[in-house]
Amino acid sequence: MTTASVPLRTATPLAHLRDLLLLAKPRLSGLVMITCAGGMWLAPGHIGPARAILAVLSTAAVVGAANALNCYLERDIDARMRRTRDRPLPAGRVEPFVALGLGILVPAFAIPALALAAGPLTALLALVALLTYVVVYTPMKQRSTLALFVGAIPGAIPPLMGWTAVTGRIEAGGLALFALLFAWQLPHFLAISLYLAEDYARGGLKVFAVVHGEARTRFWIAVCTAILVPASLALVPLHVAGAVYAGVAVALGAGLASYALLGLGRTGGRWARSFFLGTLVYLTALFAVLFVSPS
Image (cartoon, rainbow, N blue to C red; front, side, top):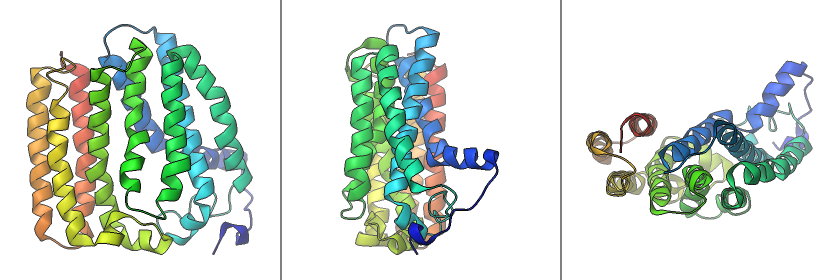
């Protein structure tokens, strides 16, 4: 089934607005807003509340537009997958040209607004993230498992954007936040590819678990989780985070790494899904401590 064969369904204005918001993948956009704001909070210097709010909202708008373009480009793939077939485009609730239009028009306003609020470097990073996600990562998912690493780049850029919004420069502290988010995404998305392997195979996506199998995916989840622990601690010697954070990061990292090792001897998707949820708890707790503990 392709989206071209799905008749457009009529809907109330409120339901249609909800579907337009779903094109932006609001949970993902919300996570980006938090990490971008975290970069601002942790960066040395000051940015006024009005500029900070405009920068975060503009960042969310660019991310939402990238997600809308992703929905447009993958609408036929989404129609074949159980997890995504009820999204607005494959379900026929929104016309594809609407997603395409939003994906093009919104950044045309949001990126200049970001340059105004946070500076040209931050706007440039937003453009790099948008193009990497839409032009490189989205088509690459159908061709190579290396898309895992490419897709982690735009996902890790928002905290660096928050940092540059305050400092106007790319510095070691901002790069450490980038490295933390990059490293976190690897076991997170490997776990998704494991417990949704059948659905990804149905969609024709070359995710790691489909191409390399369950055993190797579990092994690399453990390896990437081990890499995540030192990545999280790199913030301490750079004075971005302090002793309280270091203790919590070690405890959280040890717990997540131990659970990753437990997965080596298991089969089936239950462990992978619980590990995926564990990565969300890990990141939430880590950023909460970053927000409240002094460096």
